[in-house]
Image 1: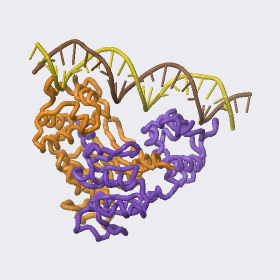
Image 2: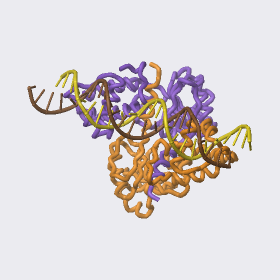
Image 3: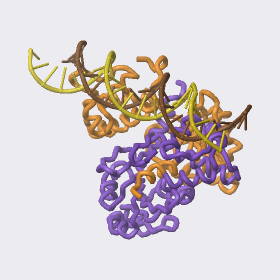
Image 4: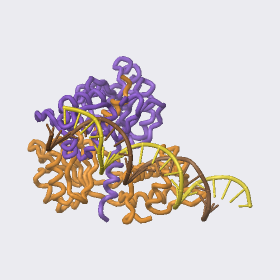
Length: 209
Length: 209
DNA sequence: TAGATTGTTAATCGATTAACAATC
DNA sequence: TAGATTGTTAATCGATTAACAATC
């Protein structure tokens, strides 16, 4: 099946990333072959779901045998485009931004923080890990060099929309947004939101009174 | 409609938290009344969806008029149980844990970090913001005093399951898990996962080649 | 009253899962 | 061959949305 003709459901994409993490772990442990039933045990994703998800992208296994762990990992990496270096720009050099820049799993999947921005004069020019914190107003010119298409927004809610606008103007087409606001972006730009408070609120709902 | 007889869809709960954030913002701006159509403009959630979501919990508006912003905010807070102080324990005093402890929005919604744990001897005893980092092995006894039912896991994937087990043993019934693993927990314990790399991978998929 | 907007039903849409022929 | 497991179809399940009577 063809990725350009058939729209892949977003939940499928999320699970593809989950499968990949699982396969990389198995590969590191030297496991060579795995069945959909075993994937279900490890990820708690239904085996039929797993096979259906893969079917959006092609055929990956051998009936009666299962899937080659390293091959499947390689092919999913390619599908998700995490098999190549991907420059990312980050706006917001606060605690969260700092944690993200230092987050080792991001670089492990070839996401490379290429520039860090803030609008706070007392932060601009200082260092965050091995990055200089740059003036937000230089974002367009910096990204002309860097060429990132992925952006991370780690600023307060009140500033998020204007940062998004700036990013989109500078050629960013995919945004990970940590601010609790619904961003307005043009067609063709993808946004995913991460909202800790929302997550905690959903958990809170489930507490016994 | 009754929350104990009818299971509320998880997407509805997530949106309820979104509505609440939006209403609090409106309330702060002094807006007194709002219609579902205006909520759609602000949150990009379909107006019928909004009304349907609320219908799981009762009646909140007045036909022809709309919804009282402060009243609806108060009632959603109560439904999500974010109207009261909620103690939370956090394990993992790394960069991410540190960012979470310092995250102001959590306390704004009455989530109070009550204790921070780590297993690293060089961290134990040190301070993180205004918390002493405690030995993970003391978690059960500390939580006997603290009485938290919410826990946050901000440790590497390899340690996450054992931390989860420890939390569950200490009375935690809801876990926010930042480690990229599928936790096994007993019936009655709720887990929500936040996985930055997964989010980035989904965005990466959408990039043009 | 006329106009606006709710709460809810019914229709639509899409995602999950069971079942099984194909195949190693 | 017999047993295992895939890829895919069809059935099920659940979530979203349009439509509208009820009501302010």
